[in-house]
Length: 266
Image (cartoon, rainbow, N blue to C red):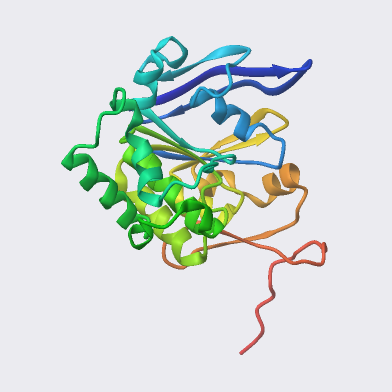
């Protein structure tokens, strides 16, 4: 299912947090949003999963204005992992994951056998199946994050919204998650602060700055030394990944401008 943001604007207290943002995401495509803190990435996503109504503009999913759909309908189409996602009650892991089926249930309808299999499969994919009977409040930050991602997958959405999903995850689980996104066939919009992970994962990247979309395109077109310096205020050097050809961003911690390495004579 495709997703479209048409002139999306969010104004709060007289300040435009998102200003006329237009972005299209084709069915099955992974689009990353990157940019400095406060650039409007999370605000834009909140409009997609209906946590915040835009001041102007339209969010379309499958051609429909999401704000005109019944909540149950939109929840069956769009699942989200938010920065604020968490569990305030000490449910077990399997109970939290099962909450992903809420848009399909009425009252206290029990899970069907196929839904239980779906939950087990999602927990296995996120490497939390062995935690099924543990209380979620007892888990580490990374374990909780993987449980919440499993809950979103159990929702069986057509569109998956992920706001900094790699937070708290160790390297293996970051790679595992992002690899799953590449294979799952869902339409995905993901906020990532790690530009190298964004380059490796996303078909296209949108760069936001002060609420504006300043660049959009394939990673190698967007993640240039000049753009990173302009938007992030950081001097970097960019090389190509030896296998994929994706851009890889290198930096130092000195704050000095980087220059290409000089090859020494053999």
